[in-house]
Amino acid sequence: MAYVADACCAENYTTEEFIEEISEKVDSNVLSLFHVNIRSIKNKFEDLAEYLEELQHKFAVIGITETWQSEYDMEGYRAVHLRRNPGKVGGGISIYVRDDLPFRCFRKTDFTKVNSDIECRFIEFNRKHLRIDVNVVVGVIYRPPGSITNFSDQLSEILDTLQKPSNVLRFIYLMGDFNVTQGGVVMRMLDSRNMERLILCPTRSERKPDKVLDGIFSSEPRDLAGILDCHKKKIKSDHRPIFAIDQTNGFNAKR
Image (cartoon, rainbow, N blue to C red):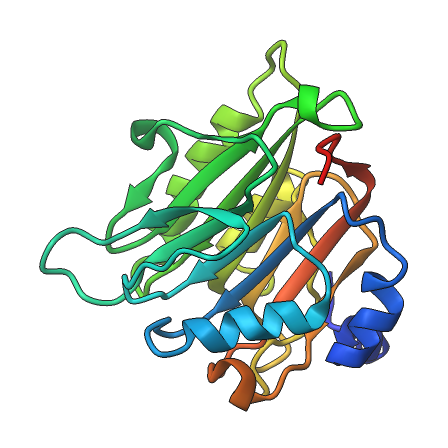
């Protein structure tokens, strides 16, 4: 989908706008996703936790990329971490799942990758805990500055497995730092698998409109997603946080 200036204006939320338009109106048990490339979570974790509190919405899943491998526990969440091999610097992924939501991690051999071209980890919610009779898969992804073709091929293999016809119907969400070009091999691959791009606008001010940096993709159309206009002093990253909310689905969990 092409960059549209008007869409970007509607897609940006200040903290106050997010609270007024979403936190105060949206059911707290909806399926909601949050992602930020933190560029080292060390010395930033408390600021991140404070910012999430300010939003007054407890996201179902929080994905953090480029943790640079420091690991923290977040109150009210269970954590899944991904580290690079010993001796490798940079990268790192953390996934935080609301602690009242049952989920499973996919087997590492199938869906967890840590190499010079891709880092990713996937979790799944079983349909018996959801309002709609489908499983929900969430993958958090980071593309290091390696081969775009290799990144595309490895992510494509994962999607092939997830989308293979079976007795289990799945909705799939991908969120993370993709760092690819609109219309390039990765975007064409995602489009061919009916993964819809939910974040249309740049998440770094210096980026060109045709650059897809931080993104959320969904196998089902969703109309509530955006970029959070937090000041750098809140999270101290040059990537702006993004979110998506599925108002048609949610959890049966009691809080």
